[in-house]
Length: 74
Figure 1 (cartoon, rainbow, N blue to C red):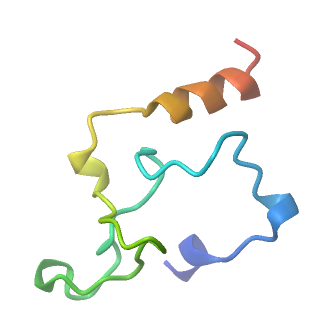
Figure 2: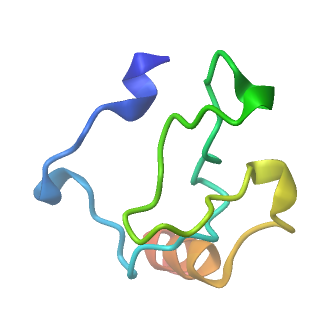
């Protein structure tokens, strides 16, 4: 699981759009926590907002779709 949290250098992490808190690719706050149901957080947003679990997101965000379109030229 630790490999899911490796910090990348800026040149390695090309988002193509501004950071997207609604992205389906962004884990929720308590994912991988040993006490998932106790609210123990494994990561937090710098601005204090709640990071939703993937299951609480309706699907791809607008920026997810934009990134896919840019990557696959469609």
